[in-house]
Image (cartoon, rainbow, N blue to C red; front, top):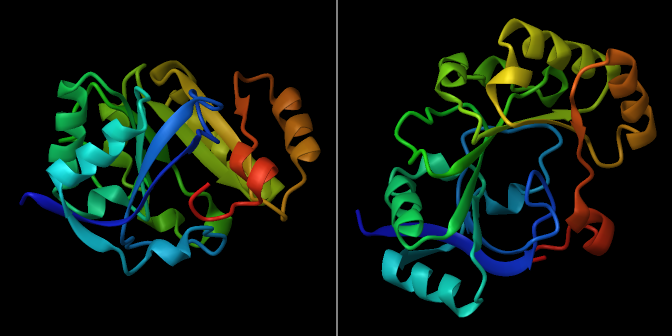
Length: 214
């Protein structure tokens, strides 16, 4: 397969995770098998256009930044995503992959920083978490919990303890569902837990109110 269905390619500041604030090219692939109740990218479930790898790489190169984020939707729902990730690494880009945690990361190039969600109960999709992914994670990878309630936070903390996530990956992020959970309240829970969480506020929503393409 030499093409992918791409919803959009855009240049912006990374709004999440370890490289937050970096000028980054985002390649948003179309499609996702999950339906999280708080999803903010449902517009990428369908549509987009088929693009050859060469065209994707050409657009990325035009923005003159070493940071590239492959996102969705769920990028791994398209098997051809794996080849794109490897090509980007071969070209010496700093590559991150945003993935739901519901599909296997076993074949993702280990040079990629895999930013993997574990879906909390209030997402409606916690049963889709593929726990066989967890042993594959390395210190180069990151875990993200998107949380809507104290119940979600307590569940996430339990997962961190059960799977020793704080020592398995470089960063474990706790992110409040925008408009549902107060970030200050989440910060208090983090402090009370005495665990090395990283609080994540989505920079793109603060700057541009989650406008598509920003």
